[in-house]
Length: 63
Image (cartoon, rainbow, N blue to C red; front, side):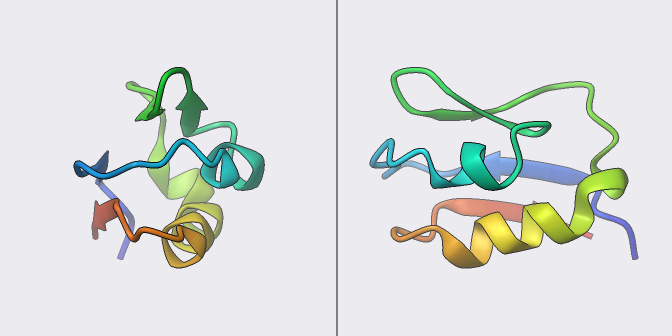
């Protein structure tokens, strides 16, 4: 199944790891945000890697 939604719940520590792994989807400002309008299915593996690598486990997605 393709990823259809990506979001970040409260608690981001702004470590920048998600942006390093998948800059096409994640942008770090004061804290990490998800870039809107991206075809998430094109970056599925990177999104999953970012979510699994997040030290505070705040990256969520739905398939």
